[in-house]
Amino acid sequence: MMDAKADMIENEQEIAAYIELLTSEIPGEAAAFCTRFLRENDEKLSLNKATSAAFARCICRFLLHKKNKSRLGGIIADNGTIRKAVFGQLNTYKYSLVFILKRVFRMGNTALTKEVLELLTGNPFRDEAAKSYAREWSLEFLILETMKAPADYLNLSEKSLKIINQFLKEGEPD
Image 1 (cartoon, rainbow, N blue to C red):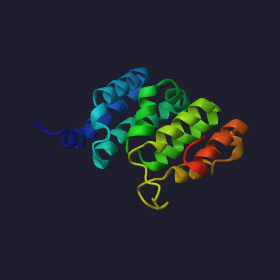
Image 2 (cartoon, rainbow, N blue to C red):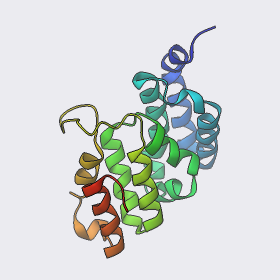
Image 3 (tube, rainbow, N blue to C red):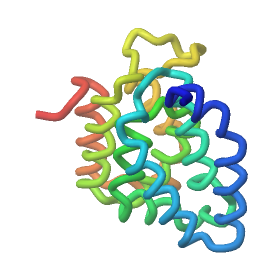
Image 4 (tube, rainbow, N blue to C red):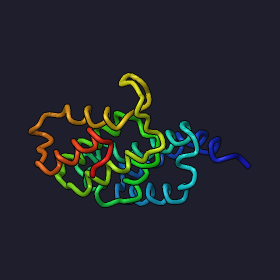
């Protein structure tokens, strides 16, 4: 029997293609599949960088699909399994995180913003010493890159800005 690392890495393209097909044809079923997939593999999500990144690429295939462009914020808000995995467990590509964070911040949901930033703070693949040009990411890098979006796009409330700045300055709020 293969180990989890080899199994996921060997099957990534097949799983990603299935997610792509489902998302194109039946986005609701793709969300259900991704949720089941994450739950069934919960103990494998943070095994190592390569395996975790393979899981992240599959889930981001769903999240960042053009069919989900207008639904991305809602998916993150409504699906705790996907939210916990993408932000708190997986070795998600930093620019995918930035793209998703822009959508989360833009929603103006301060509780969700705080939760997502807390998940990122506890992510096992976060590296606060990471340089901005490195594959690794720091929370500061993610926040600063996200905040480069035009102010009128993000449309942040004072409360949201306060939460974001607390994470930026202190790593986590009081």
